Length: 314
Ligand SMILES: [Zn+2]
Ligand SMILES: [Zn+2]
Image (tube, rainbow, N blue to C red; front, side, top):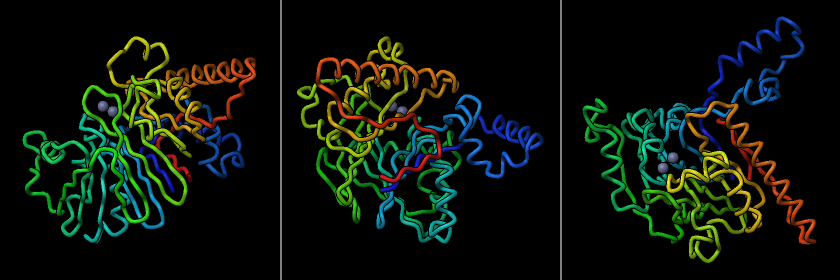
């Protein structure tokens, strides 16, 4: 399975200035600008990105989008170069919940304005259709839902019941968020990834997670909410978001292979997200050391803080 995080860098202009300075100094150094930018520290390089939630999960046969945050605008442009541009696109969008940061990109998703395209929305919440319709509503947006040229369909998913989308099995599980929010587990070809956003992970024990524990088990990749620093997460109870150390605990316990931390605080500069990443590393290393000292070594866990535009082969 391929996973794409669909955004663009928030520090783009800074990156270009740095690249140009380097170009004047040494042409050979930026023969490959992409690698050069990636080699820079995140607070002066491409950064973590500033768009809101949208990911794409693809397999040889299926392509699924999760959430319609501002990142979906760029994805729409990509899809327009394919079947959506000719009005022959079939798009599947799974919604976790309806907070603005997960909806705000939908009015700017170009394939929805092309006759012939089919846009399918999926969600567990019974008010899925009402919430999507309200996103296209005067005076907030000039084109009312009824006038959208694409054909739009709504599908209610059953909680914790798998549904096949071509060759990928998708199962929704409930997360811990102030309004009902459902994460998704994707399984294909013996691999599994889960999208666990937005969640505060208030149910920390296996027992308290109940039937939703299955979301986190035997994962090759867990995409996890790390909006806050460790300190902020301890202060912001019931705000609906977690931090890196919480994801580390869940991943070590459930033997997850890799964690991708996402949903960085939109108000945080890159330096602050770097600090959250540093705290997570400190926590991870101290947790491993403590387990080792007790003679109960933990499995090595791969993890990183996501950057917009990343793509990962699972
Ligand atoms: Zn939310
Ligand atoms: Zn959110």
